Length: 78
Image 1 (tube, rainbow, N blue to C red):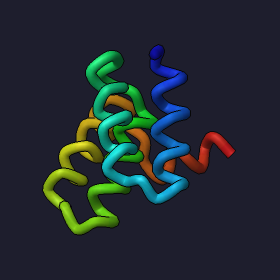
Image 2 (tube, rainbow, N blue to C red; image 1 turned 60 degrees about the vertical axis):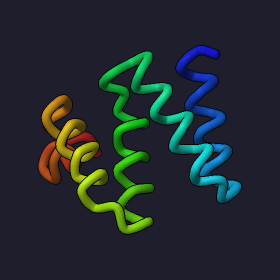
Image 3 (cartoon, rainbow, N blue to C red; image 1 turned 45 degrees about the vertical axis):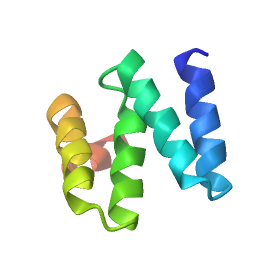
């Protein structure tokens, strides 16, 4: 599977409530493409929603450092 296919499977799994499967797919994406923004942010969301805050912070910090996206830059894009 390529990155796009893995992301689709991950999002489908997440939508269907198959959180464990989604995590596996997103982590596989990161093995193939270390800084994939969608995988980083979704893993952060999943871990935060399930109470694993240290893991969530790890992925959030990685995404922030790589993309430097904050409120101001998001507003500038609109």
